[in-house]
Amino acid sequence: MPSKLTFHLNGFDDKIFDRLERMQPGVVKVYEFPSDTNIDEMRRRFPRARIVYRQYTDLTYRDSADAYVAELRDTLAKLQGRGLIWEGINEPVLQNEADARALNQWFTRFAELMHAHGEQVAAFSFSTGNPNLDYVPLLAQAATACDYLALHEYHHPEFGGGDLTRYRQFRARLPAAARKPILITECGVDDGRNNGWQKYLSADQYRLLLENYDHELLRDSYVFGATIFQYGAGAPWHTFNVAGIGTALADYVANAGGGWLPAGSAEPTALEQAIQTAAQTHTWMPINTDAALYKFAQTKNLGYPQTDEFEYPHAGAQYLAQVFNLGIVYVKKGDWGNVQWAAKAE
Image (cartoon, rainbow, N blue to C red; front, side, top):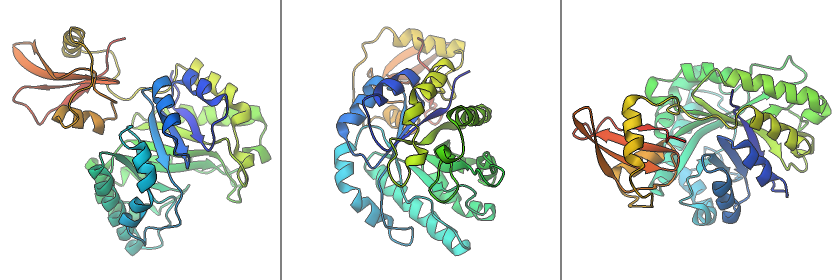
């Protein structure tokens, strides 16, 4: 069975690329390290990974999203166009309904601004146990506007561990259109006082805790990955650092079958097999990024195009399709509102 565990990167040592390549993770998070060289190397070594990026800010959701995007200007100029998923305000706290409405407006605007740059966003990044679930329906507009939902889930070593599947309750409070894929962009052990797993657990105990959490995540196809906080941690987070057990964690993920594949990667149907057969007859190359199929592929994080659009027949109908790094986007001609995608054959 595959794994959804991966790393939250706060630094890049001489082992991290090899470890991640062995893992082939579905998600990786990069914190405050705007290296286009590193991002490009990640894309080369594990191309199917969704790469989440967060830049530190002193701004809150009481400031404008425009101000935050202005802060991102230099980083965005370096990293734009690499298929990143951008987080916004980190771990916002909602005290009342007015706060929830303000946060809803902030992320709705953030999504609008980043989408104008051709970038994807993850909404909320709530801390463990937040927000009050009664406020969640007030966030539906922002959740719908964004591409992913980001949540943090930590085991608390002093209070019975906590509910590490609260994401299910959060998601259940949203309308269907707002139930975007979930990224657990921080996880692990945290006592709330900047003390991580090393203060409370042995390496073996921590690996077991993470593996048990992984097995729970695997029950929910809408959870795309969980990034362990963190790899390469310095003060004040040195007790969170997993670089010392990075090989063991990479071995676990690799032996589990690598990072989790999103929905759509199951055994292909007859229609999907016809798409794959047709796709193999075409040369794969980059093409026009303004095309409709390309835009759909970006909403599914399928990577860069590898062929131009092409037509193929199936069951008496004509289809239009296009190959991307991580799948084949297709639509029946005339049924333009029903674009779909399928995993590529190995």
